[in-house]
Length: 195
Image 1 (tube, rainbow, N blue to C red):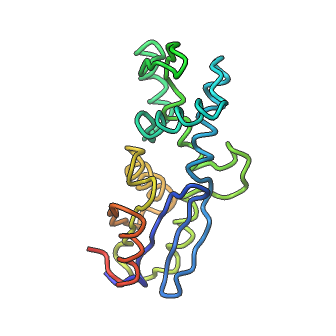
Image 2: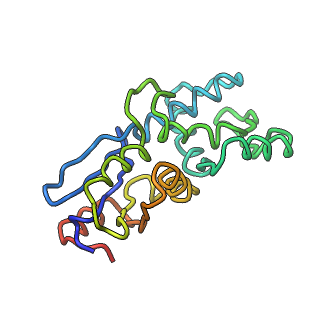
């Protein structure tokens, strides 16, 4: 597909952005990876864990990459968690204490769909992608290339994005691919191709 009919969705350190059309214009769709990690830390602090030190923050970054995922349906995920006794994983902190990970594993990534959770006024990735989709009239599908931290983690993101887009407009079909790096994504966009 031609780049004029595609979107690059990149989760960078500082923000999530959508790059689209031949002019390479971008829309900031919400929080970045740092915001997601900080929200994860906040959720753990609410449970009584203090991981606000530099070492704790680095530890939480690794936990986000290893354990966080995007829930397809929050209510169902909460019920599934209750069936597991509220604990998905137990991990050892840098100081040796045991940390029980539960709902924060799927609640932290919710800030990508609802940036208000981290104090931002952006609409979120699905709503921004839906707004951009209006410029693809006549296209049977919209190619979407995931880059950045979307490549490294966040299982379930693609399925959730598809579900939310379908809820906004059942006629929109996404053709989602993943770049192995942001650089590869930029190269693909510069070459005007999605494989």
